[in-house]
Length: 104
Image (cartoon, rainbow, N blue to C red; front, side):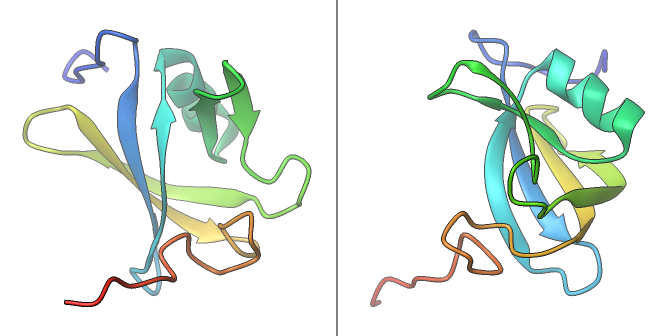
């Protein structure tokens, strides 16, 4: 964790990607505690900025994410978590939170 750069709020941006399909499932925030719980538990934990607390992905929905690998970018300020999802990632029921497109 010494190579990671958490922001002034103690958070690091986290991209969650399906390890098999490579679909980007969601983007969330982790702090040092949620990252440690993710490493120890083998499932994703995040920091909810709106609730100001830890949340275990799938705790209420059952749509957990089993961690396959955790990577960090060249600047050390973003994580990429490769997972095996047990259900949709989005609270809407969509497989990915990125199910809408802007016209270009």
